[in-house]
Length: 285
Image 1 (cartoon, rainbow, N blue to C red):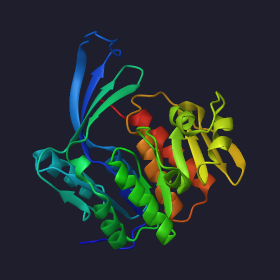
Image 2 (spheres, rainbow, N blue to C red; image 1 turned 30 degrees about the horizontal axis):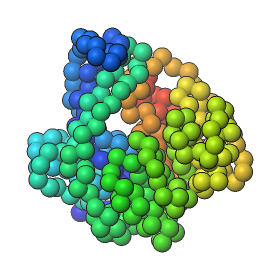
Image 3 (cartoon, rainbow, N blue to C red; image 1 turned 180 degrees about the vertical axis):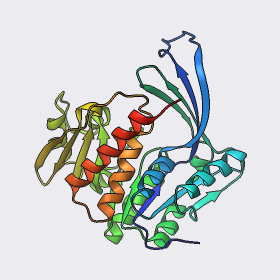
Image 4 (cartoon, helix red, strand yellow; image 1 turned 60 degrees about the vertical axis):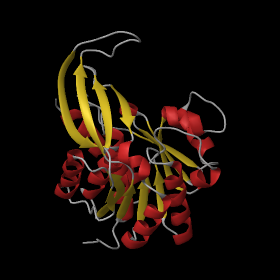
């Protein structure tokens, strides 16, 4: 059943994550032994939808294949309270991701798009019309026409778009201009800023010429928030990091939901950083 008028619609990918734990990352051409392997539903869209659903009503817009992985991923979304009415099924394999996690909690990720590459702009427009969200959250794992369709829909309907441009790629200025906020890490911020800088606060000010508002996530060093010409650093509680996988998605999803349900930007950022911090400290093999 369609959950019309949801708080958040997440447009993005669903992947089956294959997680391999290693002592350290291999150098180029080097082989290292893995300590353990696990499989779990993932994908930036799916992760962000589950995060948003912990706070408000959430619909996921995406596509899966015709394999067993699709059933596992959809079951996980339903169990998390996400409306999957707008997740279309197609033939072929679902998206997959291979994630290496080392003893420091750092990760490296390789993504195979699979069915995710079949999501179209028409899929997105029709689904957003039906879900009628207060806020739309999207990333860059989907085809670029999908990102453009989200930005156009939000602009046309006066809705807020949270853009998490990961993995980084060139974007039309009109897409970036619709972002409110643009949620990036330091590497992504440097990619989209008009000029280079080693200072994240300088990058945040520069990005206000590109997007309506900006959040730069700095891991354990907190978050830089920029809006209306003002820049503020928000601290995070120090914790022992177990695994950083999914932390950015947790932050983005919880942020979107709190904004959709009425929180002001800085309060939403604080709540989102708390959720992401708890995630990296609690994850286990």
